[in-house]
Length: 197
View (tube, one colour):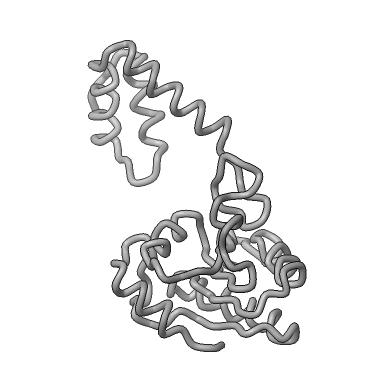
């Protein structure tokens, strides 16, 4: 293992905390930062601080926003709600241009083995939203994993007694894949061919 001077070692350690960033990539990032101009490093730091300070969750859907209510919630059809696991999933689904509804971010899925229960994700907020906006359909667009399927089924059992149509995106999305990596044609087909659950 190489010995780095302390400032570079600290920088490598911080970059290595990012998802999918191993020690080699973190080292490349650290060297790149050190070689940047002081002005560019300050801009980079300001961008980090600005994002951390000003980005929050939308009070309605739970997506990232810099306002109280995000743009999607301000202009979408509140009676058609597409439920996703994480904010990154919304970016993937926004490629489907003919979707006119709004989104709801759970911030996770049910996973008893990991200690994630219904109280740990935004199911209560979804139920409140369904009642408040008289939602007619909820599209379950959780990832096609065991946990994603279990979460979709659990939520559908809560919504059915409320008279809400609950659909699941079609299986054009392969089992075990993440929505952020699925192409827009497949996602469009999955949304359009959704089925009731």
